[in-house]
Length: 418
Image 1 (cartoon, helix red, strand yellow):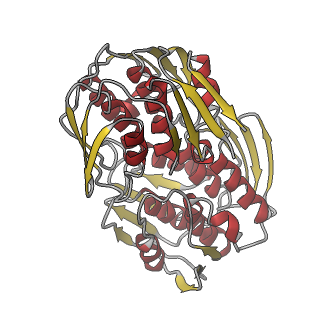
Image 2: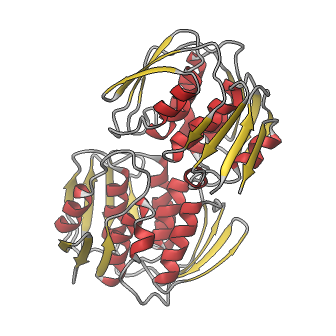
């Protein structure tokens, strides 16, 4: 099993070109099946989750060609409606294929999805919304069977601005009869990217990035699509913290600075100097990190839950006491016990963590329990005294392309042992 071994203490400096966004490319790849067109997609990250989605599309009958970070998907030959069980269980994002397959085939069979074990992420909202659009849903023996002879547009009020549910509704509604309005929709930039891709193919969607999205159903898509995937704001935020935690100086390129405002605000509070324009950013870490009174994870444009573990690693060596309130996922503190093994002083009370900064962390053997928690252990290892070993690196590979190579290029003493 792959492991990362690193020795802390090096100051990171240099430039990073941020890869395409995992949370954007996965729904876009799902969207390629909505109509039998051909898609050329640039800036596709080389990630484990993308490989899983590619395998799913191939199993459904699509043809795919990939060269470096360019992917060509032809969904014309799609001839299956069942998502392979072993692939669906490997990745949470497989669930958004429900809406796409209902649009294309009027039927889909999928098992309950897998992914990181960061607490219950019920798909009740997904299923209720699809039923509102006219789908019939049967659940049995861990499988979901959706059918719809004809989907019809409707108004859907989400109880919570769920990203996945918003994406599933969009994908199901693009060919539904009439107009669909999603209220309390998720506002994440990745949904804007999905809207942009679908509109290029012939969809009529407006409002992505706001809490109200309007989808006017069309009979068919007629256009092949060329699309450039947006940069990954979570990857960018992780490298920002790598610079902050090592007192480094890193320049990030190929970013959208507006997507990072919540992270920028908290890192400035921690004492970082940040200089930015529209598409690049320089972050200089402070000699001593300030504690942060409160970090509360919230749906976009709030502080992202996907950055909670990484900022906790930073605050574990801050000067003073910090509080993190996790409001999105109830079991997203699995990295805490691993950080404590490295010498961090962290106490959790339900969804709240209190972090009392220590002077130094010490390297030890740790285990990545999920994607972002694994990234937090790498960040902690960058400053820990001595040798840090991280197991279950496959979690990290789900969301970071060449993570160890990029960090090594910035000056980290890090190796991937396969």
